[in-house]
Length: 80
Image (tube, rainbow, N blue to C red):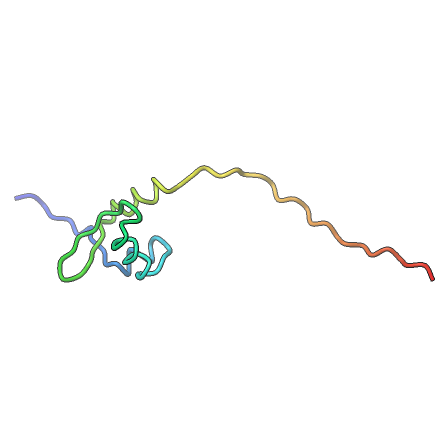
């Protein structure tokens, strides 16, 4: 018999992992905003591997630069 792994997480855990609210996940499901697979029984579950794939797909390379120094505002003295 094949060994079963418990890689399903609740919608709350998935939302926390992705940094969104459970309501956002519900909206994504109903509007089919993103191709994020889920398992629906009496509750909604997500596979951990699908969450990782979703983040990989949504990750874009950023431009790394050193932060620019902040300028100090110097008020010129007014002549009277």
